[in-house]
Length: 245
Ligand code: SAM
Image (cartoon, rainbow, N blue to C red; front, side, top):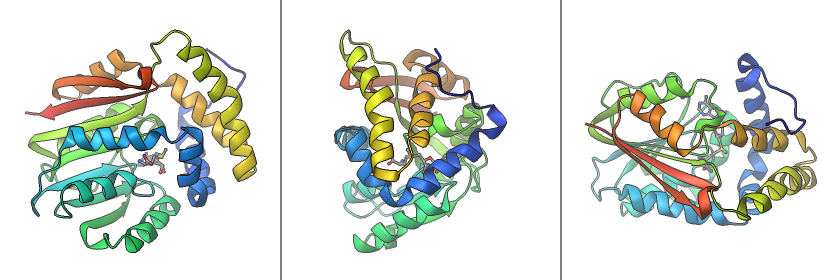
């Protein structure tokens, strides 16, 4: 469907995504609360419960597109501050905010921040117990490349968890959601950051992302076993899970 936003050719996509997150980095956390009406917190908490990180120091998680650190902080806390999380993001501005927040929360000892591309991870095969990515994979131009990198860097027995906006499957909620995302979100974006366009792009990218079933098929294609998904809030978001067995 086209909602009148311009098409972004694949080759230009990463550049645009980088501009968006560079611009919003400082206000990213507040924007998240406004745009999702606080719901992202509950979805993220549900993701961490699904992961159920081991409470032992050797447990290593890679949080890709980790931005300002939300997922990594939650994992470290849920492990009783035992786990180590590597926060990887392509955007240094987002990571900079994350590192400041980690410092304030006294979590820096459990975290490493790495600036890199999800399509080409700078880690050896079999390095991590879990790979998480929240609201990040739809921004990556080559999703299949990101998923096969996820598979490569996981240990045998390792877990993949992907939290992403998905297809709303509830009558009425889909109408409300459309009105919210195509009108309210760009307006809020403009009011808070002075620019509506980055948010129009983000809304559009949600519509283009494969639905629950199709994304599950892509995860299987990358080699993962026991692939399942759970819808949150009528499918506004979905958590996909897979195992490297
Ligand atoms: N995971 C965080 C959260 O849930 O709050 C941040 C999500 S934010 C919506 C998306 C992040 O994806 C941005 O920080 C952006 O820089 C990052 N990103 C976009 N393309 C990427 C890529 N190719 N590799 C790694 N990170 C990428």
